[in-house]
Length: 567
Image (tube, rainbow, N blue to C red; front, side):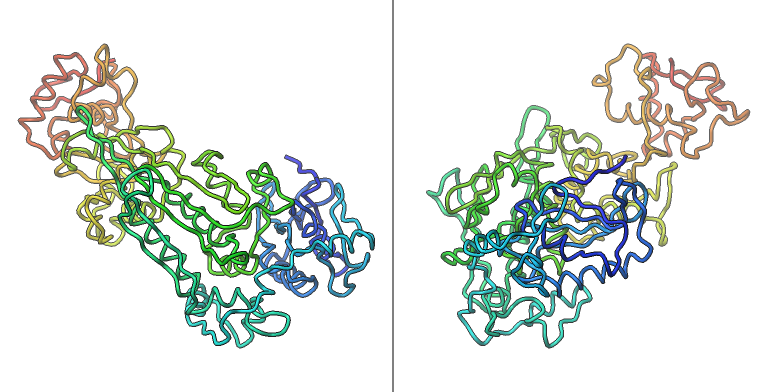
C-alpha cells in the first residue's frame, strides 16, 4: 500500500550531505504533535530502501545530536522499519518542551528555526521566534542545579555496562547531566547513587485508605534502580486471588503485567520533579491499584492527542537514559500497548496530577479440583486472554517446553513439537513456586500457545502450532453434547480422531486412511493405553461406554482390529 506525506510524516529518498535533515527534525521538534521522517521512501510514497542501514543511522544520530539546540537528546529515536517489504530508516521526533529549537550553526534566526506547516518545514519569522522564546519552558531538570554537589554514579555505570555500553569520562556532558555552568543538574541528582527521592508503594486492606497494611519505600538511590525495585514489588503483588464457585474455582491475576510496566515507567519518567519534588505514588487497594504522578499534560497537548500516542516527554534527559538501558522501548509506543488491554477511562487528569486507576480483573477459570486435575480443564472467564502478549516468565516457560528434548530430553512424543516435559520438570528449571507455574501454564493454555497431553498424573506439555494442533471434528460427538463427556473420554476421542496426523502410524496392514468411512482411523486399544498411560482395563471400560453412546466403533478382529470415529 502506497504511503502519503502528512503534517506528521515526511519522506526522503536517501541520506546525502545535501539533505538538510537537521531542518526537518527542528520543524517537528517545534511542532505541537512532533512527527516521523522516513529515509528510503520517495516523494510518491514508494519504498526504495537504504543501502547502508547501520552507517546512515549513525550519521543521522550524530547530525541531530550535534547540529540542533537546545539538546534534542531523549526527544528522537532512530529505528529500522520494513515498508513494502523493504528496510527503511524511521526517525521518530517528539514535540520538545524548550521551543524554539534551531540549527546550532544559524542560532535563533529564520535560517535556523523551522516549523512544520502542512507537509513542509517552513522557516519561522523573527516575530514568531521571539514570541515562542518568551514562553519557553525554562524549568527543565537540566537547568536546575543538583541539591548535592558530590555525586557518584556506580549504579548508572552498572546499568549501561549491562547493555554493553561503557560510559567514558565525559558521560555527564554527553547525557546532559550538567547545567550550562558545568555543575551537576537535577537529572544527575535523580540518577546518582544517593539522593533524597523515595517512591512509596502502599497497600490497604479495603477499597479506601482507612487500614494501611504495608508501606514500602523504594529510593534514596539511582532512579533506575528504584524503578526496578517498584516493578519487582508490583510483580510480587500481582498474585492470583481465587473465588470458589459451584464445581469450579476462578483464579484472578490482578493486572496485565506488560501494560502495568508501561504505566509504572511512564509515571516515573514523566513525573514533574521540578514543581515540588513529589515522586509518583503507588497505592494498592482490594479492588484496584492507583498510580499518581505529579504534573499535568503539556500545555499545548489535548487529551485526544495524548490518547493518540503523540509524544512530548516532560523529562527528556531521563527519557534518553531510560531508553539507553532498555527500560523504555520506542518513543510513543507505550500508550498503545496499554490501550490494547485497558480502556481510556483508567486515566484521569487534574490541574496538578495524572492518576491511572487499574481495576483488578479475572482471567482464568479452573475446575474446582486439585491442581493436577485442572491442567486440562482451564477456561477463560473473560475473552481478553487471547489478546494478551506473553510475559517474560511465560516466554521462559514456552522456551523450556519448546527446547525440551534438544539436549537429551524426550523429544516429540505422539507427534508433538519438542514435547515430553512435565509440570514438575518445568518447576525445577525455573525455581519458582508450583502455584505460579500452574497459573502461567493455564494462561498459556488459554492463549492456545501450549497443550497438555495424557493423564493428569503422567501427562506432559507441548507447544501448539498450526501443524500439530489436534482438534476433534464437529461430527465426532453425534447427538451427544461435549459437556456430557468426561475429560478422559474426550482425550480418547481426540486420539482416535487425530490418529495418523503429525507423523503417527496410520492404518496398519494396508495404509488406507479412513476405512469404512472412519475419520483418521487405525488406532488400537494398546496404542490408546500407551498414549494415555493408564490401565488397559480403564481404557477398555471407557471405550465400551463411548461405543454404547455410538461415538466410536470397532473395526476388524479383537486381535488386529482398530477404533474409528462414527460419522
